[in-house]
Length: 310
Image 1 (spheres, rainbow, N blue to C red):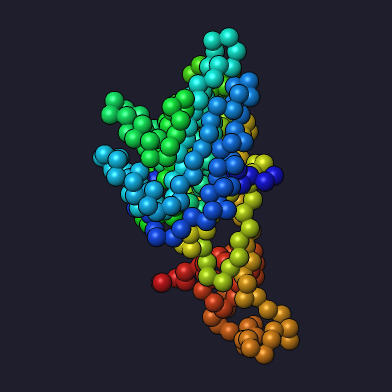
Image 2: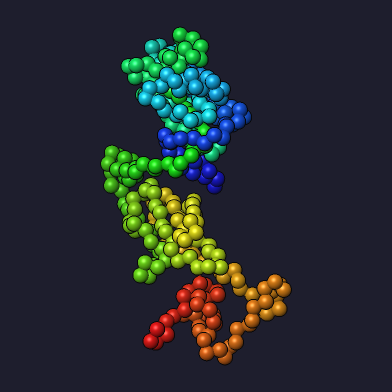
């Protein structure tokens, strides 16, 4: 299952910091705008229109009328326009229309590696900054400029907001229902292995399990009995994330030492001496039974047991 769209949705956050000097290509700007125009609209009235701005002088004029200033260093901007057209009788869905278009564009911006922020209230407040921007862009009076989206590469890290837990805002089969919770099962000895902030989760809740037993020169394969899970390697730890299904979940791993060799099969650039079976420093791995001389088992990565007196 290709989950890149889900990853993009979950990774998108508003960015209000400075942007780098890197330009946004006209191709990328068009792709983003096309994503906005592809959004659904009430009765297909297509009430949302867009103006992409990548001319530096025009950007400077727009920034000059925004007070307090925002997006001052953005190399490009998309201005969102709406036209009040009734879908049927006196029912008008322009807010829903342009909101769907904006979210589509925010996801496209994220997917292409850029950052942005939905600025609407700041420019449509009583001082009507939106009208001054519309004048700069020669927008006809029967259109209303309702939002600006800066586009560019982020210069700094995003401050990720803290979200409420899934079951505080979403439920199944009724408001604030408490359906069955399920367990996440994994092995952890003295905090060594898998860890998680809790082991019981509600269906649909986001789960993150951290594996902190990374060994040098060892490759790992993680096993989780869910339809989709994401593995992120930070170097010192591995983060395994997924959405809790309606059953218990088992998290486990298998490992293999990437420095393993068989006699006469290694290349000339790697010529390790074979293990001396009579070496007094050799030891038997209690986990897999392999014979070793190093600090960690070459087969499964288990640390060498301490000797008496160590």
